[in-house]
Length: 381
Image (tube, rainbow, N blue to C red; front, side, top):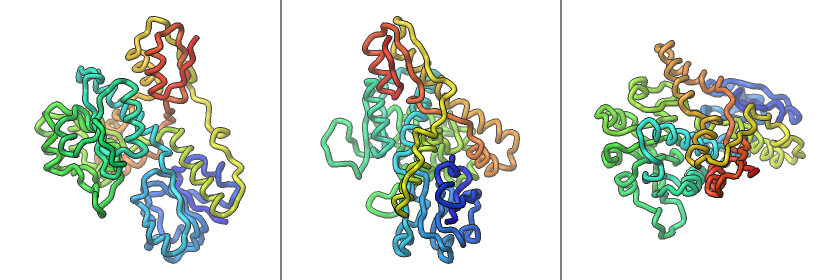
């Protein structure tokens, strides 16, 4: 069995090597000739999987090690009897922790207390739902807009226009769709971006085209709001001027924690084994590396906010990724797409909050509750 895999799928050889010959290829430039004699194709979000790629191939099964599937023509795969699987939720915690890191950094830079802000969450799926729970654990008031969520009358639910007008921080967590009753392409258009009140913060870690980037740039030129972008229109050829106007800009890596990547590989490995009837011999927990920082201890007088900020930044500080993108583009202004993709390919190891054991010595129950609510493993001593 020949398995063609995007070279950025971690541990592909470890998971799939026992099932066949694994051939690694660059996902962005993957073409029909490279998959013509393959039995299985494993991709990430940069590869368009459709008729043009697979029509004359032997591929019987396709899997994407990602949550989103807007890059895959699932209807065509079904029509041709080609199996398909993806990894919903594999990077949800990673994206949530990216957003939490962004908010933590901006609260210090802009001088606000998170507990005094209203956070608007657009999309209550795997990521949005988990972000909501972590913010609620901190006592933050949230508004939620999701036309696909169960119709429940709660204080959180809001129409999109109301959410945009009433939120201090707006975080986007929708898939990219262009059809259906609620398409998300340019969901935030000129009308919606105009509703965002001065002083508010917009964070997009979903898909670039969910926000009209040119309209956003016009608004940012006015200097009355803050934006954070991990995803961009026209990736990897992003707009350098837009990067200059955002407070934090990163190269589509919000979901790039090591846990998320390995979890995604493991999920599609299990799906492939089920599809072909193979036994599953590789376990995610058995191949997860030990983190460099394994534990941290706080004394009894630590306050919850101080403990969370210290632990959060020790595990992940988004400013490193922002600086990495800006520095790389300053050095190679003429090669934006190349730089963008290289930063993703060579992304350093980043762990999730769950990798850190936090030890508390006689701390208050509130400190323990809030740290646990953010995903840290807490041990009271």
